[in-house]
Length: 42
Image (tube, rainbow, N blue to C red; front, side, top):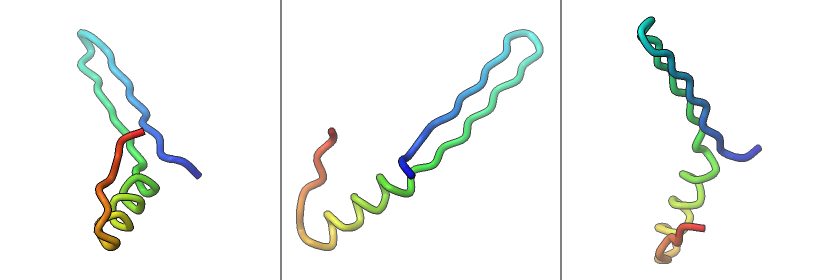
């Protein structure tokens, strides 16, 4: 499963919601740091 971001906004009713899943991105960054590599953005 890949990472995702869900965002919801309303206006005068003042509703704002964010949901983020970054497990894959965090895992890639951890692996790159463990192996002494610099992580490049795609």
